[in-house]
Length: 65
Image (cartoon, rainbow, N blue to C red; front, side, top):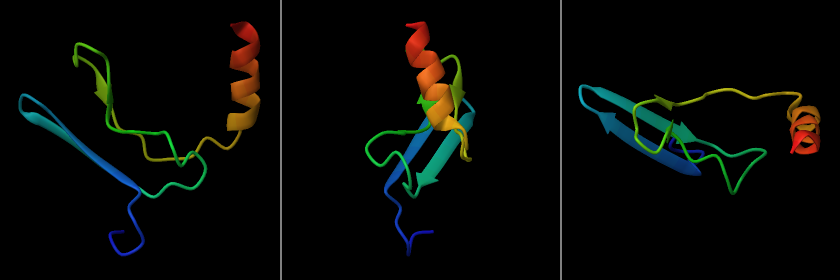
């Protein structure tokens, strides 16, 4: 993937566990920094996938606010 990008990359080390992520941005070019962790870093995730109905979900969640 290094020859096509990446647009972002991140590494998070939590004790004996390391999460790494490289990203080629397609939809959300400005956002999407990963790995993602809670402020206290007890829980972290890296996500590799696309949510195809993201526009519908964004509208639904925005109306709940």
